[in-house]
Image (cartoon, rainbow, N blue to C red; front, side):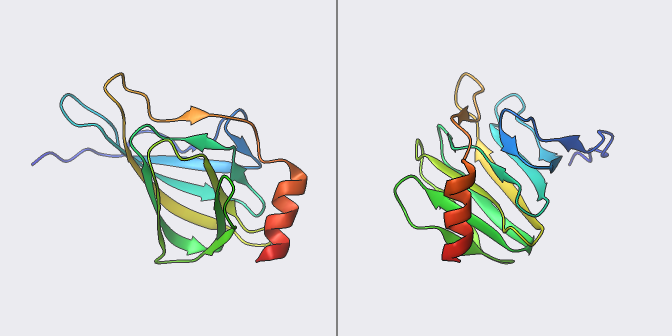
Length: 136
């Protein structure tokens, strides 16, 4: 058994990867022989990821609030506490908070053999997001 004390401060989501204010707390980090990465991600209303993919897929588990998630070409899904969303390896997608609600999720994934967790693409533009907000 190994207990790791939380000593890292809450980080802010990089502007290259997120629109709006996003705060990240690490839960698990890849170590020798273990590729698991997990984070608690706090999205302020309207905040969201850019389009992105994960080489080995990703699961998010909504803890609090109301969010939105979409795979490229798919419908926008409203996600709520207790919902789990799995994104297939290489599947282009985004996720974030509803326009008027905070959303917190736990993001879980495995890094690939080179240590890559994600490939980041273009931002979800305001028109795309506005459509998503209307569809909910």
